[in-house]
Image: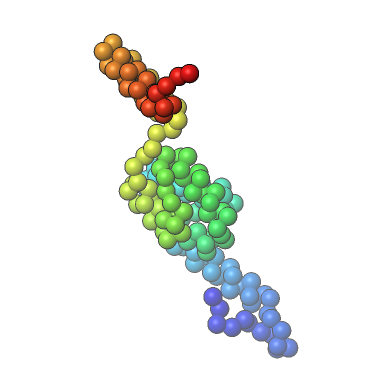
Length: 154
């Protein structure tokens, strides 16, 4: 943020001076760059760089200061959910708009199974059942189906 725009002698915006200020701000940002320090931060940095179309993103760079907005935030949340298998609410992202903060948030959410993983787990459970357990499961299902249908057939 500038307190005032640089003006030339004619009172117009001094574009070369403005560009120099922008270059100065960019070089300051580059000096303060802190790269990813672990695999989670690296994966988040890759996601952010791709979505924000940035060459690199530091762990303390603010998503919104890099040009992010709510639509891009939803893309990042979607990619985080897929990459880390967590159900991270959008609000958590909006309240923690740096990679460093987001890495901490991700570590606090339990991972969820994909549909494929859940199916494999259920199949393993079924394979491990005894005949008596299978019969009990089928009887319970039949009772539930009968109760749902009124228990009478006509």
